[in-house]
Amino acid sequence: MDALSYALNAVHMTGAIFYYAECSAPWGFVVPALQQVAHTLAPGAERLVPYHLVTEGRALVKFEDETEVQLEAGDVVIIPLGDPHTVSNGRPAEWIDSGRSLGRFLAGDLRTMQLGGGGERTRFICGYFGCERHADRLFLAGLPKMIRINARDDATGRWLEDSIRYLVNEADRSRPGQSILLSKMAEALFVETLRRYMEYLPPEQVGWLAGARDPIVGSALAVLHRQPAAPWTVDEIATRVGTSRSVLTERFARFLGEPPLTYLAHWRLQLAARLLKQGAKSIAEIAFEVGYESQAAFNRAFKREFGMAPGQYRKAADSV
Image 1 (cartoon, rainbow, N blue to C red):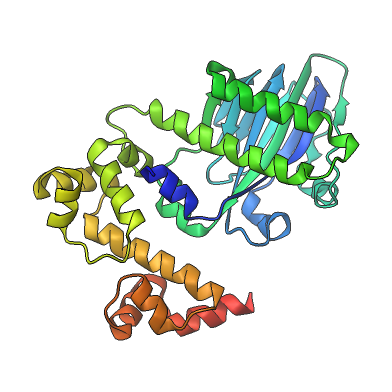
Image 2: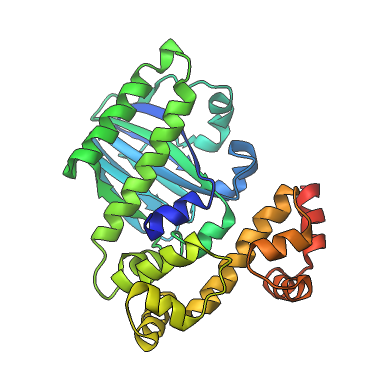
């Protein structure tokens, strides 16, 4: 697999669609910071990333700092950090608090929401992607406040939009398996958005996704994520990806801001944190599984990274 595939496979993604709205101008929604409602929407997810897909008409997404983006039919906007924002068309007399409507979604109600003042019509779909917090060091690292693509620019995007529209249009029929289909399509939309964003990054862009696109750094990331516990040296990584030690180190510093083995050390500890939460293995077993030769060395490294010993981390996770 490529680096992005390994990263996405490593964070236990989930997805959902919780609004399907038909609005006539003027109308407006207020969307809270998703981290405030993460425990309600997706108890197992540590990071929530909202998105909006406009299927007809237009909408304006606006943030608290006055940053805004106009969406047209086919546009998908993802808010990587889950910042609070509004979605609107015109100047509504009353703003809908979407946070208060989550109960309908949690009860499985995806019936079309209709509202507005009778003017220009907009149809859009809202949802979220959930993942573990170590996505912050992977594909969420260095992302802007929002990412916008148009799903209709290529065949894959058009197929995704058509599939999602079909599923939400038949929501009232409550067919078996619909929730899991919507979840998988939401995940697919997220992955496609990241892929398209990577393709259009400017050459000077840095960050994890830019590094994953780079032939040298991307190949090294794939190698490290495939075998994180292997006793890697910088020379061995460079040999595996067909470059020199100096070039590999320079590219990692440029795109990720740290040397290859520092990146690997952080990733090993993130994997260890997940295993500690799962609770099935001893601390010594986890230390060996993520590449440490001794439990003592693992304990020291883990405490530097998380501010507490592995045993304390496991107890804290169990109490949540």
